[in-house]
Length: 120
Ligand code: HEC
Image (cartoon, rainbow, N blue to C red; front, side, top):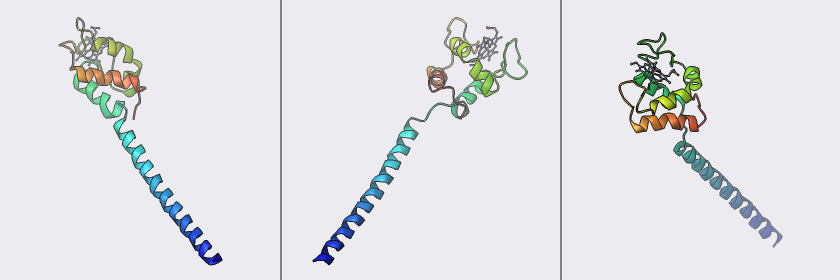
């Protein structure tokens, strides 16, 4: 009788252990999925390409065509972000000068600011 109780106890422990392990790993999977879904806009994953495709032929290093500032590094773009957001959305004085970029590219830049101006 005593022996049977001990065995039940061991089974119970094993069952708890297995249950715990499997619920832990499904939590991990869920966290990972949430991270992927909410992955932030960063300079390196999004913003650098937008600026280099649309801006740095003038705002390069050195600058060209009368552009006053270089936007070729993370720090330069981060420091200029308020001016940049204002000009990329200014239909009467747009940057780039030949017309506004698509809404989705402009939203990406705004989202970068909202996400905290991350580099990576
Ligand atoms: C064809 C050249 C050219 C391109 C391309 C261009 N700019 Fe400019 N940019 C200029 C010139 C010239 C000025 C100065 C005159 C003015 O303010 O309109 C300027 C001024 C600015 C200013 C105000 C001054 C400053 O640096 O704070 C911002 C902000 C700016 N540009 C951002 C951008 C961004 C962002 C892009 C790309 C999305 C871009 N520009 C693309 C030529 C360009």
